[in-house]
Image (cartoon, rainbow, N blue to C red):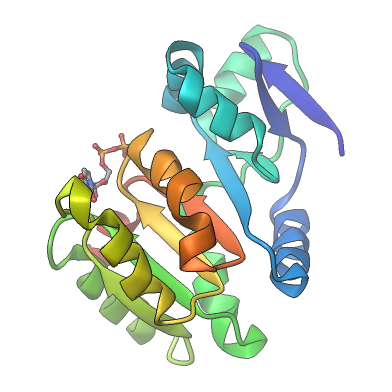
Length: 195
Ligand code: UDP
């Protein structure tokens, strides 16, 4: 796959269509895969946080979230990767989830946000296959229990909306326990969906 490197961080030149094909193959594989939608703040964190950088380097797919990356590419004379933002990708996955039989779990945000997001998305896409939701606030020693509760809903796709780098570190620690096939850190996406 073609990619560019922005301040050391790989960004794949993949379209929304290509990303959705990857999602389908990841789910068919039965193994966990991490998709990163890279924005400018992520590139900053990549430079400052070695643990975060190692997680991103292992991601199955890294898309460009949009404006900040586009601007940086133009400035550095790099080819601009197609925009596949966390909000757009998450909405597409929910829209397709009914038809494809993909089980999507909404995880993160303040209490009530993930639930409101699920309700709004079910209104928008009546056949949406949202298998569960929960907020992103709990004590560190509750993390394994939270992961087990999510696992019990048998998600194929876990959207983790807890901010950078918390969401990526959760994905690294818990992907085997949760048992989903696609993990995406989606930042403020559930806040957007709930509004
Ligand atoms: N968040 C969370 N748990 C936490 C801290 C933050 O679920 O312990 C949520 C927060 O409610 C918000 C989302 O993470 O919905 C994104 O947070 P923030 O804006 O800080 O991160 P960014 O979007 O800049 O990555």
